[in-house]
Length: 346
Image 1 (spheres, rainbow, N blue to C red):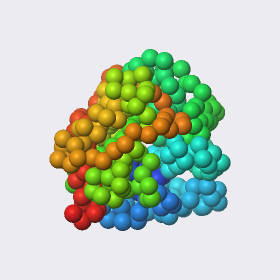
Image 2: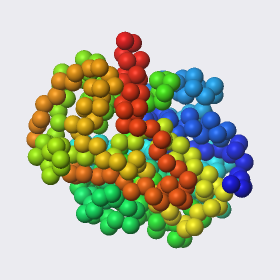
Image 3: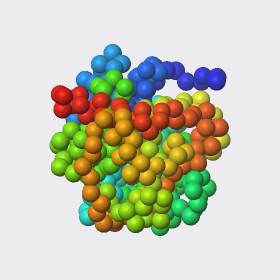
């Protein structure tokens, strides 16, 4: 691949100390990029910086900024005028919480995106990677889900903020010099193999795997499985679980595509997943196998906002980006368990 960009280019990662953000910072630094991470630490820890440094030998520049603060965003960009690309993760991300507190989600996920784009449109050229989600498809009619699947009415305010975000970026790209890639990912799990960084939810986890590992280690009394009456082989919901390191690497490849001016459109969209669906019970069984732990779980009612099944057709990312998920479900779960044990000092 012809390289038009300088690897010393400065890349901004918003939500850079979060789960996917921190792993992406590691992969960017491994590729030689200069990284600035922004995070308001609402769902992350400053200690993550040390973990990144232990893995890569370099601590990224860090600024504690809440992107809902328009003037703080303006000040940041006036101070850092040499940013070549932005990977935007900063957003609230729990489906259930978004149903209970929709205005928090609209303010955080939409306003922060607008303020970032307002600054980027001032540049003669800007490259923007958006952290989107398979939730934009709602309950897709066909599996596996391709990028051309119709965007359904969102089943949660969280999903709606991702749809709105994609629409905003598409509209802005038509009239500015911003080139963008929308990455719709399925269910990221796992941790860095070093166990120096991983998923660190504050409070009660909203996602399946950290709830599994916290239950196994004794932090949670039992795991709730939301519904066993879905029209699936074992009655539990099906998702496409992708190792977070695989996901992080895809962001670097997408960014390189923009910097190399290889994008065929102003806004491109790619699914990121493994292409395989796993049910909740299959994930539990796989975890019990790799950890030698018996999980205490109970079946409870369905959760509002959850779809029956969602797994990706990844042909487009495989072909055009040359990216493919490498890790198995078992490997991802093993890394999550290693991380859980590390942070609990077991």
